[in-house]
Length: 307
Image 1 (cartoon, helix red, strand yellow):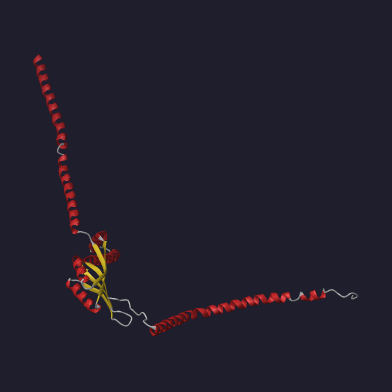
Image 2: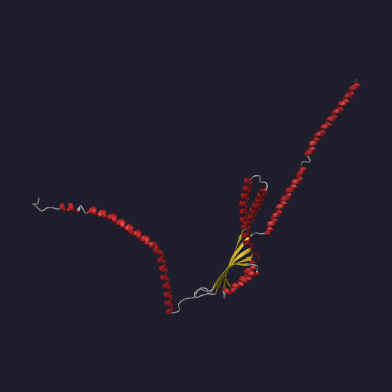
């Protein structure tokens, strides 16, 4: 009996030990599962590091790309022959891969010297060389250059163009999936509207690109002593100048009168009507004031003895 009890106690102890070891292994399981959990976080942090590096590289590219700057300027020169200087200026501009946007020349006449005015477009990279070459055509009166930074406008337009292009592409994809005519019409209307906006933005972007790539220079060419020297040198020339100025003044006066006549006629008619109304309004009052004169005569003092 005692041996049976010892055997039972030994079996119970073995079972207890087995249960403790089982519970210990089961508790270690979640710990082991929880332990490796942070391991996937390592790739996540690595991906974030890659993103940051990507943003850093993109900022580096933007810095390398530089700014978008529009440069405009004016150059005024005194030259011996504006016509010849104009041809030389055109040769300089075309030699630097530029172009002439506008060209205006005036031949010299009595009282008006010859002159030329050009608007030229020069590649921005060759602007300094162009300015120096144009300054060599004559005596420099003035040089003015102005720069405007449009980098933000260019980036904003690029972003809008990208977004609208992606939207148009999605709508075009949906057209093939349209199941009803109403859906198809709605999609085509949306595509047409956004395509119009996209074309407008592209035109603005192209215009800015042209302004940035090609600087605009206005070149003013005038001969020395451009102001006319018509000062009278004697009595007769002074008299002729006086008669000429009198004729100009009279011509101006005649023009002013011609301009005022259409206005003076209606004003004269209105004035006559107003005067007539005032005269008619005062006439009855005079008539009413005449009768009191008779009683005044009747009230005159009588001579003594008159009844």
